[in-house]
Image (tube, rainbow, N blue to C red; front, side, top):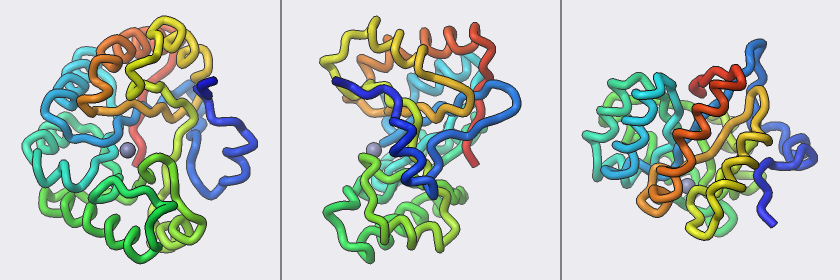
Length: 209
Ligand SMILES: [Zn+2]
């Protein structure tokens, strides 16, 4: 069974992390992980421009290094950025020091392009208590998610998945998509109808800063 919304018991247990940002007016926070990627990020940017919405890109430092021009495009389109480690590390398998060093490396990859961000998303959502504590002490905001779209899974059935993510989305939902080549075929079927449906329900789209 796929869990499209992270259960509230999990969200409240890890209350030091951000799962949802409730606003006075119904708002959705679109996020794109694992880029930049020439094909996928370019597609996402086109859609966001067409739909006139802003989003937050949680970038992998090594991809920033490979594709700086895509970062420039995201920046000039006034979207927001977040740190997603330099090498997409799984926190549970990594010592706290190596994990923090990898976050700093991603920071430096951003800084080379004149970008600073204090929002962080752990790859796979896996981060140890100690790693989390250390990042919070460095004044990072740790951004998890309320809604998982499963765009990275080529075995999803698009229509039921779309219905689920639209139904489960609520005021303040942070929604995870991926600007990666693996997710692109699914993303192409999910993203536009999702945005259109949420707009029709009266939601606005905001960035995480
Ligand atoms: Zn990731």
